[in-house]
Image (cartoon, rainbow, N blue to C red; front, top):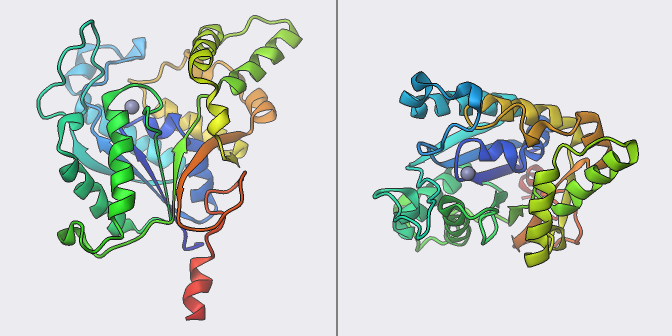
Amino acid sequence: MTGLRLMAVHAHPDDESSKGAATTAKYAAEGNDVLVVTLTGGERGSILNPAMDTAGVLDRIEEVRREEMAEAARALGVRQQWLGFVDSGLPEGDPLPPLPEGSFALVPLEESTEALVRVVREFKPHVITTYDENGGYPHPDHIMCHTVSMAAYEAAGDPDRFPDAGAPWTPLKLYYDHGFSLSRVEIFAQEYERIGEPFPMQEWLDRSRKRAAEHGDIMGRVTTQVDCAKYFPQRDEALRAHATQIDPNGAFFAIPMEMQQRLWPTEEFELAKTRVRTELPETDLFAGIEDPQIEVADR
Ligand SMILES: [Zn+2]
């Protein structure tokens, strides 16, 4: 073991497999301690894989999602912990309906922050990953995941905050996951044009172009690209473990593995907070953090 610890904070079960998954598998395989923290149980996720949309599954969706999560964590080789909040669901309609009572996005920030601070102080991560201020996509739990992670990053090392939630621990870096860039999809589209085949992610490409025209491509914010192509198969295995959420015939699996590994072998992150000196761009989430074992030996 390297003695380094990475904590990936996610809103729902399955987010850890679609955002930065190969990176967590890589760091785990390389002897780092990796913990996925899942803030909600994903109770309000709809069934997105037609093959799994049966009454029996929907009746025990909470339990099914726990089983799926355990299998995904096994596939990635990481540890996983639930924080126990209740999925807010994705509100739809115009005007948007109010969020269901008791759901995660309505929990007072002090309460959710204390819960996450408790896990940070137990696990003692050097690096935390979470979502950007837009949540990556506008789900109220994703935006709250950002807000709570930022609050916990600041509070965990402060002995005056949440004194009953364990001994202070100061994480050193915090990143945002930025997996869904337009540049990545454009590169695949070009390759399909080159080989003269129809592009299987056209809808995704159109959506990404529209978003990038409005907000700019997220690649403009990326500071850190982690080479993790070797772990793409584990990422896909973890995605498939979330059988109710991920359609095996959907866009996530549309591009052949070999093509992904050849043309876009990295996952992308934005260094949002750091307490150590590091040089950008980076290729390692632990860049700038000295080997903690050497540090201990020196004392
Ligand atoms: Zn989610």
